[in-house]
Image (cartoon, rainbow over all chains, first blue to last red; front, side, top):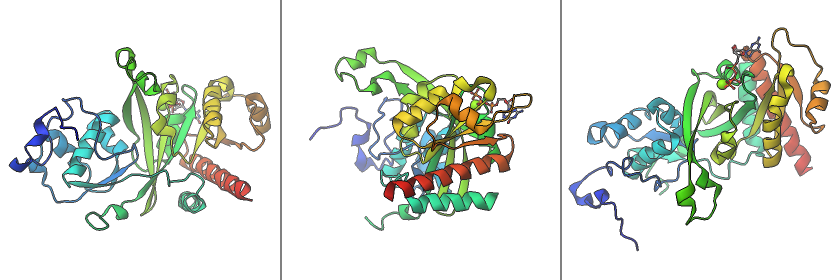
Length: 123
Length: 193
Ligand SMILES: Nc1nc2c(ncn2[C@@H]2O[C@H](COP(=O)(O)OP(=O)(O)OP(=O)(O)O)[C@@H](O)[C@H]2O)c(=O)[nH]1
Ligand SMILES: [Mg+2]
């Protein structure tokens, strides 16, 4: 087992809710695997006040289900950085996530029919 | 695990790419169909993601920023369609695997005054096996070509639909998306038949 070398997340008994400064540590390998179009939603279990400003801002964008891409756009941060923030939020239970698996098969007829029906309602 | 979160109730995100040459109307198209003001997001692409030698790659890697604009259509409470307009001027988005992975399909916008500008997108989608159609964005003052003339000029396979549109109008752009999905449905039928 490898022991993490970059420190800040070791003091879990202090009750820190997220590992701070993950972005400035340059750690860009989130524990939750998020996609550009993973959907995220705040659980309401972690108050923004318990978070540092970056994480709090990200959480504030997730009260309605939204995508990683949308959060990144509103934060004006690159997708890769946004994923780190959101993965931290997922790790501490502040958001739930849903990542379109490889099961989101482009050739799935029922999905395509749903899309077509949705578009035709707009026409 | 089944119940410690509510992720099952989160909608599924689907994606369609809107590609084509510089200034062909991609952003206009996305704005016309999107229910939100188009947003812009960027990704940092590292040339090391080309999966070269993992030991020497570290020193050689260079980073590029690719910005994409995108919009959203809520189809029903469980399905959200995202439309990503690819940047026309540079081709770095071709390296952004995550963008095209899992895309339902793509719209290649073409301007008949500069048809060759969409060759790169056509080639890319053919290579990746992503189904697409070509939508000719009819600019004022552009010579009118019949879809078959465009097909011939682009060397498209016979099954690739060519449609005409006005990317400024929501109805026209939404119809293009519907045509794309109909094309994808027809393709799944013929594969499984
Ligand atoms: N007449 C006419 N003008 C259009 C149409 N579609 C787009 N335009 C205009 O063409 C210009 C370029 O459109 P954009 O939507 O910015 O093109 P783009 O493909 O996003 O451009 P890049 O992202 O820079 O590659 C804008 O001034 C649009 O208003 C169309 O169908 N007809
Ligand atoms: Mg544009």
